[in-house]
Length: 314
Image (cartoon, rainbow, N blue to C red; front, side, top):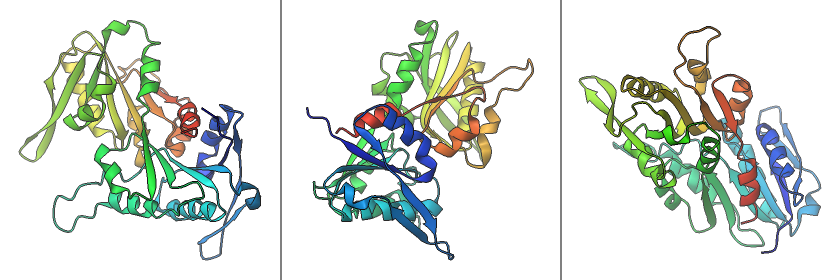
């Protein structure tokens, strides 16, 4: 298969990840954009060397970390098509992917809304834009996108499996899922590990985590999910697993969202107190989190850079 030269643009907060992606291949050339604003706050953007990208394979590495930055990034994705290129969009984390259901009249499925917005990306010279998304919350969300774009769903689980292979006592590792949804999402990717499935049980006004099936006793249990927000469910799962005899508990999530610095709940204290989580692995899909938790135990970042570089050759 012929390898493609790719011009890689990126938003401001994804610069470090973009540099790592470009370092993986001589075929990827890092490009730049002037991210300016008018006095009223609206974007005043400038794509450098715009004429040079005509007819080229172009990728834009986005980070939809807040509503404040989504519009300016959509402007760049659409404008890149206007100069007749073949474009790929890298959206490592679709932030509102968990809001895909309507449970009562009046709920707004914002995941569907953002998918519709992305589906309006103009068709480029080479055809529909490819949108590469990692571990989208629910696989059925692929049907939220129209036929004018090509959603490509990748996973960070391969990075976790590689990391687990480096741990001692691999035969004592058990994978746990905090609920049935996580099991449905990931169990086929981890089916060579013993598994524990947890679920949430409502008792009156309170919800408790229980073990539905599996035995964590004497094992290093790794809780796996697509994302973490406050971390409350992971903490409750850890307590239940430890109470059932787990020797160690670690966690992996592809997207470490952690609003309001909720990652602080997981930090190891500088004393001899018991450490609830031995390891906490996340990817660099949420750049702001990566900067915040750098070098802080138990966190370890597994970079998506190599996987993204491969995806740009689709």
